[in-house]
Image (cartoon, rainbow, N blue to C red; front, side, top):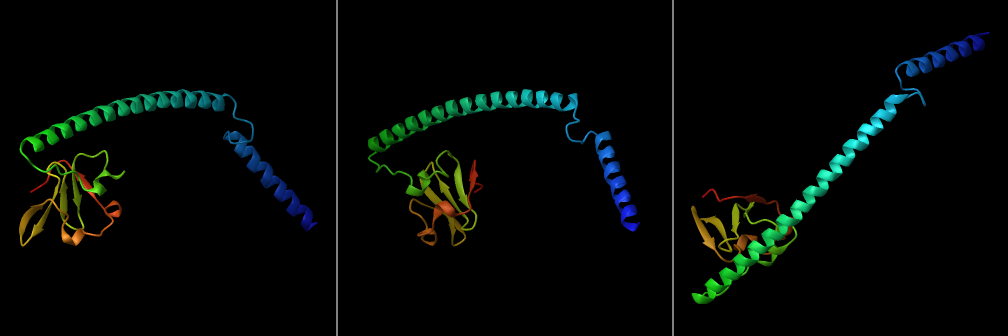
Length: 160
């Protein structure tokens, strides 16, 4: 008799839960038009998003080509200037051409070492004896470090 009462109570709980789920629209296969409308709306927004994304990347490629052209021209002019003034042409350090720094033309700041890399003068600015010093060679306390793994910040200008 107890088993029968427990079975009936369990059946009532399952039936009540199923009816409640159907009433709230969460039952299996009872979405009606709501699911179809949602799918249409989703696909419409997804299509618009992909169109915007495609336009963005097309613009980004054009911008990258323009940047590349600008920096190639700037480099040619610098080489010409260096030759006219009998300066030795100095290129960036090897780490600067890594994937992480390649598209940046800003100053590179190494917060742990309180040092800036100036891509325009192609050198380093750091503090020594309470004064800011510029050197074309890497400071001795940074030699041998894996620059690609260091925490860096790109800055529009040096706050010196």
